[in-house]
Length: 91
Image (tube, rainbow, N blue to C red; front, top):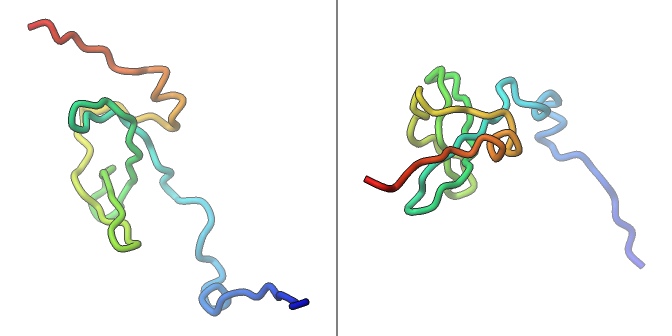
């Protein structure tokens, strides 16, 4: 029988204050992707002083487009689902 041990990583020992809650929490907004309306998570980036869409590439978060100012932001997914946008396709 092997015994396992739990040890802190060197990075956690060197930087003990890394982690924890974000200063600016993630927000959610409705977005049209292809032909599907879906809720997307957006994050605040201090360098641009605004919320941006993001994606993960090669285990890194990459900032993409800025969220338009007329887009409604919601604090959580449930709030976004309660206020689903309605639109009429009849033109």
